Length: 115
Image (tube, rainbow, N blue to C red; front, side, top):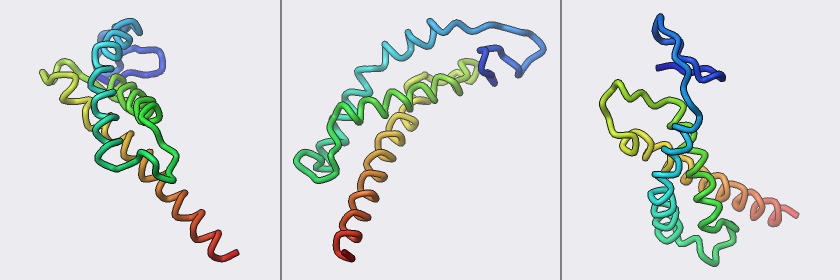
C-alpha cells in the first residue's frame, strides 16, 4: 500500500482514505516499546554522564519519529505484526541519533586539538 501525502492508497484501482486516528492508535499502543528500547540503548551505550549530551527523552523522540516512518510504510495485507515491522525503524532512528552525536563529538575533539 503506497500512501501519498493525503493518505490515499495509490497501489490499487480503489481509492481508500486512511484515517490519521488509526496512526495515532498505532503510535499510542507502541509507546511502551519505544520507551523500553530507548532505555535499553541508553544503558547499553553508557550514555549517562557521557559528553554526547543525549538523554532517554532524546532517544524516545527519535524512536517516535522512526515509528511514524513505519506507520507510513506499513501494509497490513502482508500479514505481519505492526511491531515486528516497526521495530527496526525505531531502533535505527535511535542508533542514528547516537551515531550522529558521536560523530559531532569526535569532530569537536579534532577541532579543539587543531586549535
